[in-house]
Length: 235
Image 1 (cartoon, rainbow, N blue to C red):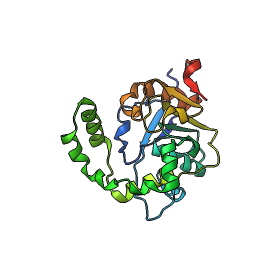
Image 2: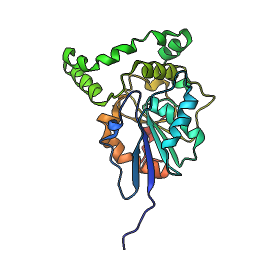
Image 3: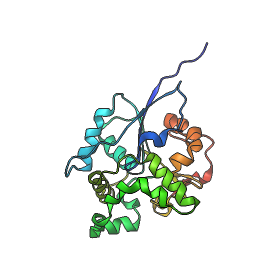
């Protein structure tokens, strides 16, 4: 007789301006998990991160869920978690607290330089691919065109402002943090107590999806990696 398992509902939040399509290759066993894809909403003028996270709660329709966020989406899910009773909270290619932000972001926050980022150029993402030289730039341009769904300047200004200005007293001890050792946005040297994916970059949810397919199920169910090696944690 086949044993029936309790279904765990998993909610996935993409990174800044990204579409939920970044999770298209992340496949969880359907007999154990049901996946729900979250999408970005346009923020209200001067809306705080707390207010935005609280507004996103309306898309959560189950209890004891696993909530997973990538990059800035990882910050959002940590704020959402303050209003939810979760079974598991996982962030990928993100930060657990403002202490883990790289120096350049802290400097941008302190000086207000983030306001000078030309977010209006995002509307030209379709043209970037035409003028990209070299295989690396062409591949990266193709990824941006495929997965970046929001180029609205108001959203990008709001998102960047709230990313660099995010403040927290201390990291949530229940957060499971997965991070690549080649993350160019949030360098690993600033990250503490994370599960490290060797060779993983900031977009590893897309190009290292096999690692997640192999390890996410156990992480969601038990909070631990199966066959965990000694060097899979950093402090």
